[in-house]
Figure 1 (cartoon, rainbow, N blue to C red):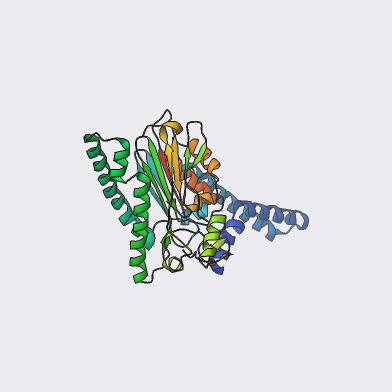
Figure 2 (figure 1 turned 135 degrees about the vertical axis):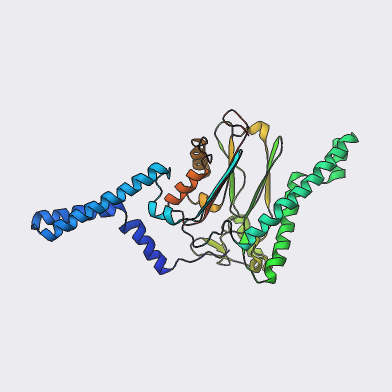
Length: 349
C-alpha cells in the first residue's frame, strides 16, 4: 500500500500540539516571564504571568482528570481526544485498535482488508470441516498413519497456504477490475488441541508468551531489506529504495502482501505465506499477541510480552494499554492488537 504523506498543515498542527501546547512548554514560558517581571517590574508582564499560570493549572488539571478516569499510561490528551478507536472482547480474546496519527484507518477499513475479512474466515472454516470429516472417516476405517496421509493429502499448513493463495487470486481479479491498488497483510493463527499453526504474509506479527515468560516469535516480517527478499525482488527485475523506509519499487514497505495488483503484475511482491507450527504441550503458553506493524514500530517482541504479562487482569488483557502506550511513544501508524489468553495457571481459556 502507498502510505499517505503528511501535509505541511498537519505537520504544523502536530508541532503545535506536541510542543507549543504541552504543559511543560507553558510552564517554561511562565518561568521566563516571571524572571522578566522580577527584573523589570512591568505590570503588563505580571498580568501575562498570572494568566499563563492559570493556563498551566487548567491544562494540568485536565490531564490529571483524564488520566484518573482512563489509564492511558501517559497518552497525550489532545491526541487521545482526536483519535478514533475500535474494540472487541469475547471470552479469552480481546482486540483494541486505534487510527492514531494516520488520516485513514488502513488496518481495517479499506478494500483489501475488507475482502480478506469477508472471504478468508468462511473459506477456512469450510476447508477445515472437510478435513475433520476426512479424518473421522479414516479413523473409522482404522487405517495406518501412512495410509491416512496418502488418502487425505491435507494438513493445517497446507490448508492455510491453499486458502491464502486462493484468496489473493480472487482479490486481484476483483480489485484490478476497478483499478483498485489496495493491499493488506495477513496473519492467521489456527488453534487445535495440541498445536498452534500460524501463517503470515507481510509485516503484521505474532508473538507468544510461554510457561517461563519467554517471547516466542510466531512469525517473521516480510521486509524488502532482508537478503532473501532482496535477492528475489532483484531476480524478478525489481528494485528497493529508501523512502522513509526500504520499499519495493520505492512504494511498498513490505515484500509480500495480498492485493497490490500493480506490484503483483511485476512479480516483485508475492502472496506466499510463511507457515510455522508450535507444540502447545511443550510451550504451555500463557497468551499470544497478534498485531499490525504499528505496535512493532514501538515495541520489541520481548517488551510487548513483558508489558502484556503485567496487565492480563485488565478488561482487554492489556491490549488497550499497549496500543495507547505505542501511540504515546510516537508511533505514526494505525495500531491494532489482539491478545489471546490460553488455558493455564494464570488464565482460563
